[in-house]
Image (cartoon, rainbow, N blue to C red; front, side, top):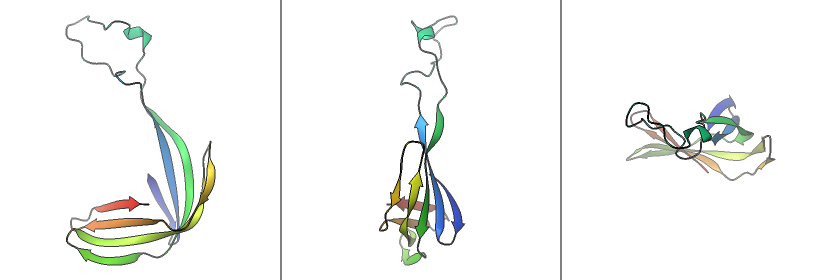
Length: 114
């Protein structure tokens, strides 16, 4: 999930649906020169790609500092509501969720958005 901070109380979240090639579509190294698997030309290899699934504008409340723990500093950012829209869906973000974070002592932030 890509996240851009708009202002202290708004965020834009972007979701991307990953389009994967068929299982086994990746070409393996041939065992000997000139070897071609049977029906290789019938299943062309396609590079995976992505496309926009949705974009959400979400309201957030001020950060709640939950203090230090053995693993690092814990904090929570409540979600107050918002909207989302995509090529094939749209809806309303209900209040009540939160972005829970653990800021480790090495500076890495782990996210758990529910």
